[in-house]
View (cartoon, rainbow, N blue to C red):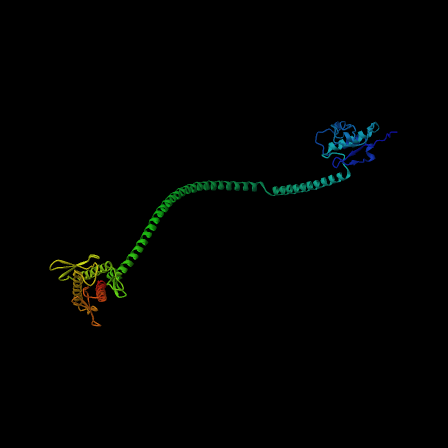
Length: 426
């Protein structure tokens, strides 16, 4: 058996919850619906009675499954299958009521109680804001009316005239300021041109300054270099002045029983058979030293001319132009040619002439060994040693040569001292 009773419910248009309508909505008349359809704030010229007949609109019911179809007017119905003929009048009245309310406001109906309360609270808040704005506007309007009532027409005209004069003065001031602005712009342009010219001159100045600075640095470097060279040259000059040329050129010393000149041994011993090439080189250095000392003191030798010629030096006899060699070639005791002995005796004669020339002055200088007739005498012991090789021992000959070199060393020291004093006096 099928139950004929079918329940049809509306849903809230905000929260979509089913609504349970009050039974009083089933007894609404068309007049009541028409009154509800009248706008809350009717516009002038609208005929409400003429529009009352158009408020009655029938909206057919729909099941829940058909609620999204076209023409539902935004309602959602909850119900089952069956016929709705028994509810047509009640549904028609209720739908017309909700249509009238929806058209008459910005809110879609029906609404549940909670949504209605929230909307009412929102509308109350908007109402309070509107009332506050209305009060502010009334206050401003009242204040404006009071100000207008207090000011007279004459005062307004006087104020207007004053403002007009002030406007004219401001216009004149504006014209004056514009003129000053144009003058200032012209002055600025002139200053800009002057600034550009100064910048060009500054750039030119810095270029010239950089160039001159570079030249100055180069000149200072060159000056410092020249000063260093001058200091070095002065030091070298002082060193040369302090240097004894004869001592630097002719180093006379001894090596055991031998006297040496520039490290060449002059002499010969059985225990130390010195090579004749070394002896000849030593005689060459000795001849060069004596010739240099004689030239330094402007001494011209008599009877002989000393010719330094390395290890082949010789003495020339001025009377017969005969050469006496100051070098030997070998052998010792018995020589068929005694020219080497004659040359050494002649060298002692030249040494004696040098000694006499040195001792001629008032210097009180005296050589340590006396030279006389081909012999060299030791004044401390009284022994004399022959300079010849013939009929002489190697020890005696070597000692005589050592004493000869000692005399030359003393003569070299005296000459160096004399000429160094002259340089200091100059």
